[in-house]
Image (cartoon, rainbow, N blue to C red; front, side, top):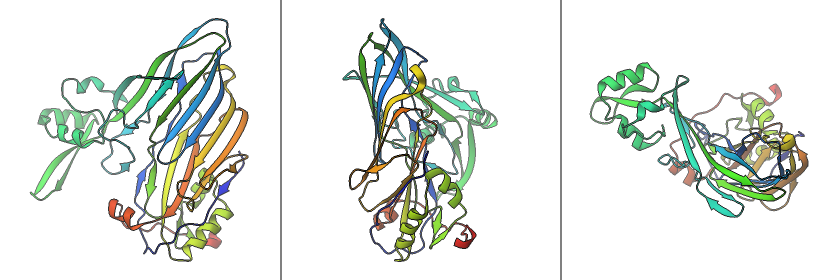
Length: 349
């Protein structure tokens, strides 16, 4: 795919050397069909923003008989890690991305399958009857773990299901039971594709977009150690660097957002290609910066960029980098720490 960088002048705001702690993004994608060579994917319209992902498909049953198959939407795996934050839109809900789906114009309620793994072993049955939410990042989960018996805690710690840490919350040093398991979730439903008929399937969800207060890859007008990684992943180039330099020269602070979309997990339809693929990426504010890899991308509005491809074979997932002004509101509502990355001199790459 060709390298593409799209930039716009950013808003102005004074900011001292600001944070670089991050909330990690987790990539989701589209629906997956049980392998079937009679159904083709004639069109996919994909819209990506940090607030919303929508996908509209047109499937065609090429056979002379009705086809019933399983359609699934794999949710991103959520791992318990007390040492890092991940961007889960709703940490107290099984439907943590707010996933909804329509099939042939009708809203449907899909089935939800959830399994819990620790050290690669399925431990879902261990949670039966304990009233512990399976989501490892929710406050209700932490509260439920605090009620486990010492024997269960010791057993689960030995098996990598939980970890026990000690800290003081104002009443002296106390032990706290922390989740270490990984939750795997998938929505699925049975769908019928009538012979010779085109069927529209649409779904939407709130993405688990990552964020950094400050920029991982650029600091005080210099490239950081992460520049090469970002250059490859998001196709940032000289044009994008010049836009960053222009903002940095004013002393304004910058805030980094990241969005991943898993495009390579499908392909279980006839030919494995998408007849016509249409991508729209919205960067939010008109004066934000955005960079991603694409081919034949055109700016179609103040905040939108689009590309279309025929007989499209997804070779890579989509990674989008957003940069915007760091506002005082962001600082007030985040718990990101002030931390400066390692910086490389510009003449050093």
